[in-house]
Length: 457
Image 1 (cartoon, rainbow, N blue to C red):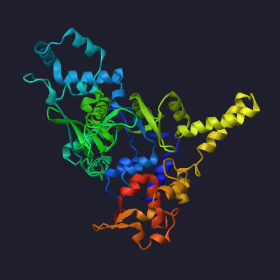
Image 2: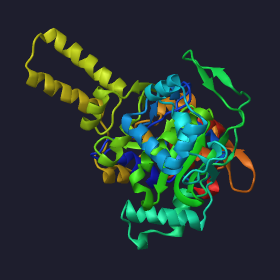
Image 3: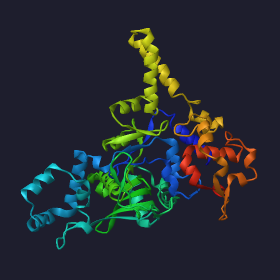
Image 4: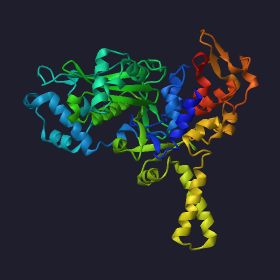
């Protein structure tokens, strides 16, 4: 793990904008959070992967099960509008003639919304036979390889949506950013299939042959590539890395369409959750992510999930980041301190609460530059989500972590000559410090199963 990388992620949380990562919709009922443990997909760690980075610099937000998901009116309208465009009026008329619906069916369709059925309604492979649609619409999962067709779409999106100048849009940048990720593509090794029991009491779907790794989900209209999702399919989550679409189709709300489609993918193929990426409460461009509900925020202190409600949203506007367990502790401390005093003025209460908040969210350095130049390990920086020094000692046997020197052989850290010469809190001058920092960021399960390629650090 490059030290600049770790520090820069730490410093993101110190900026004015509070950064959480958002969201997961999912299959029937969630049985396991999409934490860094899903990084088991990585058999090697070729430098700082984007999942290690995501875990370091943000909080996870996930949505309830797909059965709990309720599409908003805007989301439903966007999907219906796209289906009408693809199918056309003539197709709809022919369907009504050849496959008439009863009054009960029409009433049920009017009063209920089935995401999966509506989502696939306009796809070529789901159309009724012998009736021609206005357009042929196809969606497929492909390897995340580079093609000129994909780059042309990326170039159009970056220039029209993000207003990037041509000099900043390159094939090498596209390859590096969205192609050939370090996450290996392979079938799931789960030995279960169908429905399995969920610890919370409900059934969840687990597929023995679901795909894992990085993929491009391509949208083609009449053979033309018009949109593409970059997805990481993890054991328990569909993670939306990036989404691009052609400016010709801007009016069709493809952001909504892609989120709904990825939600359905998580539900249909047993991934359980849908993770939408970062959520910055004060960033207008990211507020749409809060429209997908229900959502829950992972509390890094406790490992528990808290509902993203109005109280949490309000706190997100006030804090650089939010931990509901810390907020509960603040309330309890405030109550314990005020109870013996009896009635106090609102100003006195506010001052005391502010002191407790500052103490609860204290960090050694308020400036990103100061944190970078401190040369301290994340173990010394009160880094949200990273293990503390005590937790690291209790949970992870650093001596047993596995490494490779890039020659096809695997070793335990204890076998490395310079291993015992370092300190766990010195990532600048010792291998032990680097490995300790990495282990603290990825957690017990990942640290115990991964192989770190020292040749690429």
